[in-house]
Length: 240
Image (cartoon, rainbow, N blue to C red; front, side, top):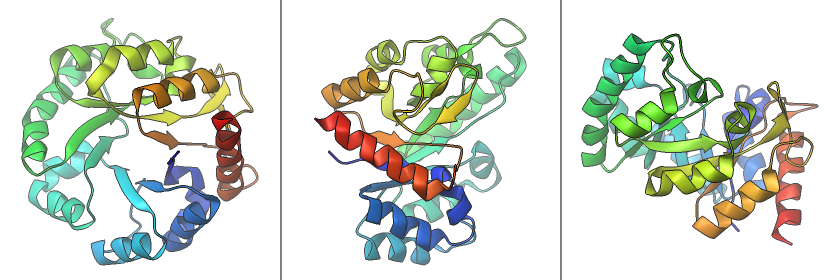
């Protein structure tokens, strides 16, 4: 199996030395990177680090605001690093007005990105599966009103009371990838195998569907690389 890691998992290292974080991810055994910021690096520096460490770029967590502020420049940067998955990590949809605003932005920029060979997706937290101020559930509304792809964060969905396995089935070809993550109800994240989320069931469903698995572990306890290593070792036990 080929696994990816969201570099937010190793933000303590990435913020100091992005190249070292990429190298560490490769050394642990991850084969794909999902960026959470570039820390001032040029496309040439990013592609060099990926190439030197023989690790692929799966996608990035990047903001809708970047597309609005400078679509051409943002696309140019992402095409230069070879990014095919532009994933919005969060957008405020606290009421109908904010939700409607985001839907319109998605409808505008998704086809523009598609023309450039880039898929636009959205990453959830728990709030997107809970009613907003106007009683609307943001992720189901995005599914109904747009053609955006989804990166299901399976822990945050679980934390909101959803069954992530059922969501993976429901989203079908709208599912870009998953964040495989563990933790406890209430929002406390943990490395894989150390919480109460249905990690094994989610893993098995992702494998059966052929969905890319991106690991995220959030607490950097004692360090991000330590957690990334614990998660990878747990993945190897799930393979058995």
